[in-house]
Image 1: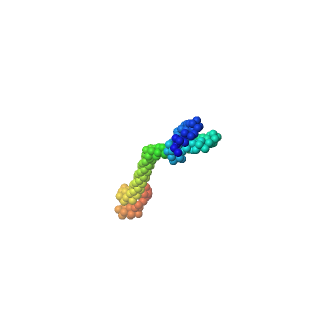
Image 2: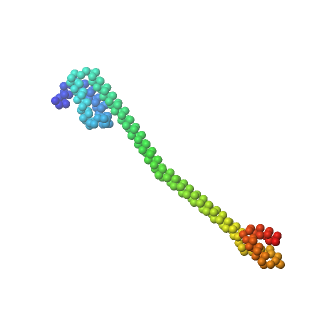
Image 3: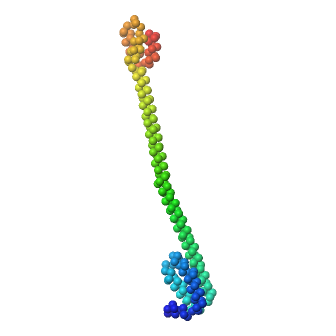
Length: 195
């Protein structure tokens, strides 16, 4: 029996009210209802057939109202699921966008600042190393100068010669140089004066 033949045997007022309800409440949202893996026309036809079967078997208006209430509940749940899904997708999209922004900020700004800071730290370390090397070189030079001042035989000889008296023999001078070799200049002067 075709759908038109089924419709012909029904109360037209009840059928029209059912179809109007289906068109207004189901067809508008069945496209979004992903839980039913059927096309909108198939879903509409299924609901219409269920209503027709109820009407053809002399179903009471209470049973039809109950079907309406169940359908409304399904639609409400579908709307809630859809809103939850939309909110979840939006939240995930916001999280993804925020993460991308953080990555871009890090790649552009923070990474450049880190590189700059590392370069500054390296420059400071190099400066400190250079200063330490210069200080070490200066200390080594000062130590060499002091060692040269204390150990230079020419300085010792000149001091000893200049402090010799005019009548002192040369052997005494050589003995004094050998004896005082390596002593500080001030000590040599004192010894020369005492002699």
